[in-house]
Length: 282
Ligand SMILES: [Zn+2]
Image (tube, rainbow, N blue to C red; front, side):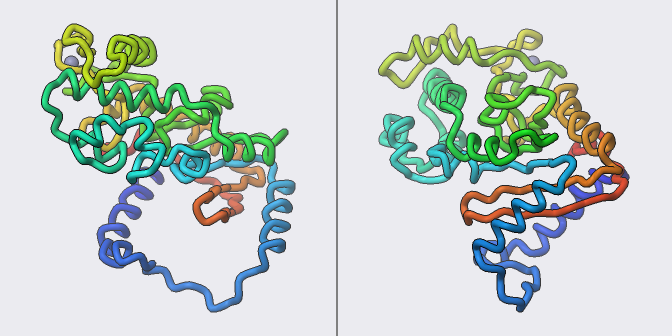
């Protein structure tokens, strides 16, 4: 078993074992009794570590987008109402992800919803926390590892600097995973949104279909049981693996900005890690 497979397995087992603890808002980790550093001391330490680091892996997740106004995924927020209000009024779901599981009256309306969702993220401006982070890390050698699908990081950084391990809204895949291919979603999403106008459905002939088997397409994202873990997915892992292997002897900082608690998790790691590509098939 590779380092990465083992890591995923351990994480999943830990989560299953402690699910009820997490669900009650607690943590199974024994917390230190030591008084936390003052806020300014924490900031100083963070700055010092960033300065000392020869290279940095940034672990970026949904908090960064939520803190910058992209807070429509999990709840009935004003931004959710603004983008998805017409669907929410009709079907009663709360949050954009919730809507993805909703049963729509027609496939045309289902795709109207998907197009709205993808259009909302693809055309969002680069959000404030990303710009702040970029400013803080200016001039550093860095790589981004993200679970976000909303393309914020690739709006700032080069593709080779970003590993998107949970998919990316810019691509479609076959909903049945009949072949290992992804293709552009940006242009069809633009066309669907335009054709929909103020309505909630797209024309039948615009429903995106797999070029090989004719099944409906699906956004290339994890979370719905059909995430295509093929060539593109392996490529994302190869980027982060390559970066870590290349810098294994350097002072490598793992930086996990947590904008929801206005905190930041820092780990220095100077070790030879075996981090192999494309291992997560679970
Ligand atoms: Zn297919």
